[in-house]
Every structure is written in C-alpha cells, then in structure tokens.
Image (cartoon, rainbow, N blue to C red; front, top):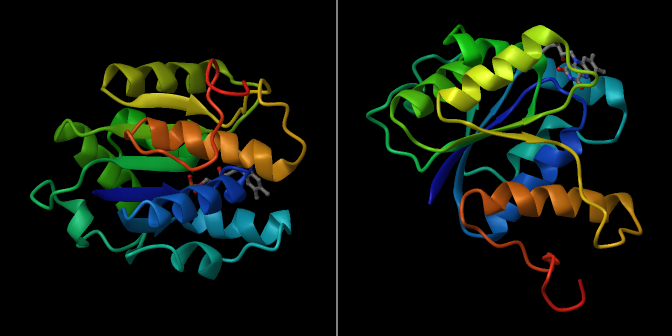
Length: 188
Ligand SMILES: Cc1cc2nc3c(=O)[nH]c(=O)nc-3n(C[C@H](O)[C@H](O)[C@H](O)COP(=O)(O)O)c2cc1C
C-alpha cells in the first residue's frame, strides 16, 4: 500500500507522529508532505517533535513547494491520502480546489482520482466557513475525522489517547494497529 500523508499547521503534531510510525510498522509506503504552517506549529508547541521525527518514518519526503513531485499527478498511483492534523486553512484549500502548494494539490488529485482522502481536523469552536468547508470535502468524497479520542478504553495516558486516534485513522484504510481495543471485543 502507498499513502500520501499531509501534515498541516493544526495543533497536535503528535497525531501525525503516531500515524506515521504506525504506517511504517504496517509496511505502508508513505509519501510525506509537511507544510510550512506545520513546521511553525512544531516549533511553537514545544512538544519536542521536530520535522526529522516525522520524516524518519516516511519512504519519501516531498517539499510542500514542489508542485512537480510525483504525488502532484494523478498518473502516479497511490492508495489514498490523509491529512493529519488538517488546519482550517488547508481544509479551506481542499474544499475549494485551491492547489497552490503540493499538500493541497495532492489532496485535489486524490479527490479527482476518487481515491480515499481522510482529513483529521483540529480546531474548536468551528465557525460557519469551516463547517461549510467540512461539508464540501465530505460531499467531494473525503472522510472527515476530528482529533477527538473516545474514552471507552479507560485511557491512563496521553499516549493511549494518541493511540486511539491513530487506530481509528488507520481503520479508514483497512489497517490494524496492534493493541487497539475495539468496543464489544475482549476486555472492552
Ligand atoms: C501554535 C499554533 C497552533 C495552531 N493551531 C491551529 C489549530 O489547532 N487549528 C488550525 O486550524 N490552525 C491552527 N493554527 C493556525 C495555522 O497554523 C495557520 O492558519 C497556518 O497558516 C496553516 O497553514 P497550513 O494549513 O498551510 O499548514 C495554529 C498556529 C500556531 C502558530
């Protein structure tokens, strides 16, 4: 499986870290695009994560300014794309087909080729323009997720919350994350 992973400037870069690590463990070939907004958030949040902590898990890393990258073309086959976290700004671009950099271009390509696109938004509260953009990407074929973990597995740590979101995101591509406790299964 080959997936494009876009990381934009929403708060919560650890979500991207968890997903990239799990995708590598699952043997998925990931093509990573980190926006300049994401790099700014990474340094501002002070969570200790740097771009290198993301790129180490990717099979290929593309610069967001590189509109000639493989994943900018529909002729380059992928099995879909996810954007995690998806900022309100990137969401707006995807909703309107505004492909000025590689990340929104790759998302546009994913939609036009009718491949799975998952956007994991991180913003609160949600104003009307963002709600409209969420509906627009949903209607265009994307799966909208929020970075909001469930609590039925009685999480004891931030890592367990991150693990929940990672597992539900990978679920959308039919991939299993080891240790994920599903409701109705043993122990849940
Ligand atoms: C520390 C920090 C946290 C931010 N958190 C969010 C957020 O949670 N959600 C969001 O939509 N934008 C957030 N932003 C704003 C975006 O990063 C900003 O709109 C940026 O231009 C998005 O660009 P990009 O989508 O190309 O990455 C944050 C910005 C900073 C500096």
